[in-house]
Length: 102
Image (cartoon, rainbow, N blue to C red; front, side, top):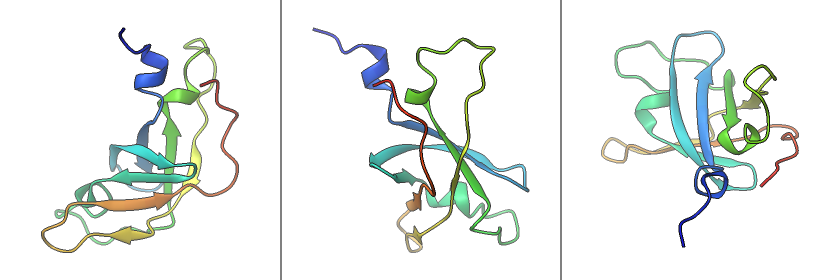
């Protein structure tokens, strides 16, 4: 039995910096914790970005809404980044998440 898309992709996160044109994706791995790649939050070709200026929105929050309805961003910050050979980063989601339908 195949998984419904709402369940399969509900933990996918879009990650975007609020003051620089930097974005990427990640996965929700806890109730308020997103795992992404280090190169998303620390791009090698840019100066250091403010680690408090990130926003996240979850694909699961989009299901059940029309394309015209807003898809809310949630404040996030960089909490941890992996070392030179570990391309991982963790971003806790700050504040309340919108109610999720899944």
